[in-house]
Image (cartoon, rainbow, N blue to C red; front, side, top):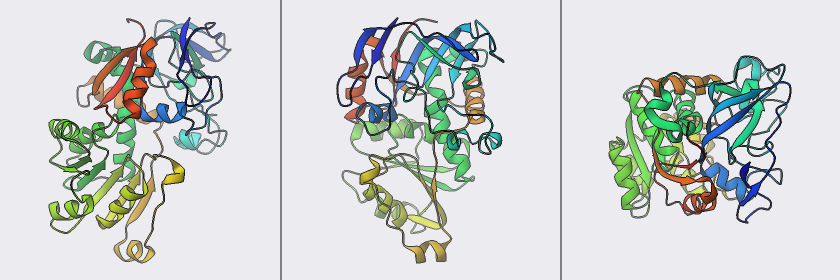
Length: 348
């Protein structure tokens, strides 16, 4: 089969002919229709996320089951599926309470510790595959369906973890990116007021078009001061930071309302991201700083169903063929993408 293989960090992915994976007893082999290319993957390619080399990266997949292992359960040939990226044990206290990203056997991720979706076929454990609801492919195609299990589900978890309530104000740092842009619609579905922050006219226009009530250009404006101005000095109830650099984290704390929640969703590089925490402010204003890591299996199921009903929609503005994966990463790495970037591998 054809695959794009990462053999060394900070080098181009290599188009190669590799063997089709042989599914283990509890695995399913899936023919890949499409796979998302996001910033998390780009950090893996550049070595800023842990990856076992050589590796076929990619975890946002829509595809069809073509073979199952002899002991596989809950899945059969012909099922249309998407994966949960975390390789979880299913038995520890976190897995048993639907918090698979904290699995005590991990961390292990499809596309980083096990070959993923930048290929014509991929295999993963039966418990990692989630069936697509009827009509989802017809509504959004494979290039839209593949990103729901990350680009929509990540913000869906942010909203739940931050307990975003109707009429509250939600600020999004990195609102024009492939994941941040989906938080706009999830937050609006909760009845929140949305303020989107990004850089450049094109991204800000896209953020407005997707439903943000106000936008802030971080290139030209003091983001913290603008948040306070737009909220009449009260600050934001929830600030979701998809950028995760010291500057944005500091600004987020400066613009947080009484009882506000700062949610760290993304990091540029962990070594470049430090959080100056004024303990007295957190105490007196009962503010919270939260980490929100990916999503759970059930949250993927929820978002697939909401998308199938037309209540949430994937925003994909850039589609490349598999052999142009390096072009996709150049776009993502430069921060030029608006919405999600996807590789189209095969027709459903």
